[in-house]
Amino acid sequence: MRTPLFLLVGFLLLAACMLLGRLFSNNYPGATSAATWIFVLLWLVISTANLWVGVAKAGYALSEEFPIFLLIFAVPTIAALILNWRVFQVSG
Image (cartoon, rainbow, N blue to C red; front, side):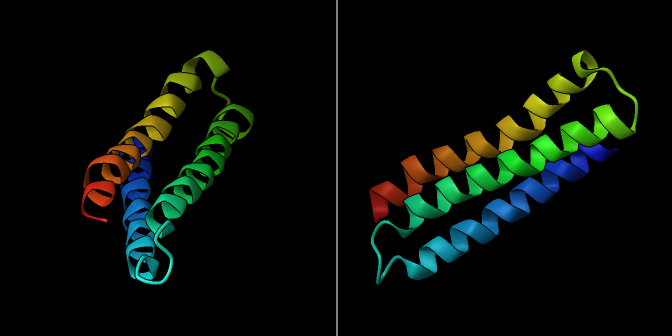
């Protein structure tokens, strides 16, 4: 149940970062790209913290937890990169 919740949080954080990037894009043209990379770095830290909790606190093996980490990190990150590439760069 934690994996879908983390994915939801990832997409909500992505939406917040993209909204902030779009709001600042009138004064700073590179704001959407900066917001994308800030999201990716922030999401990497959050996903890694989740990996650490799964291994250190919940008792899962790294080999069990690493595929979940990849899923949690990769899905919102790929969505962010596609949004930045297709939507914001074309219209911005």
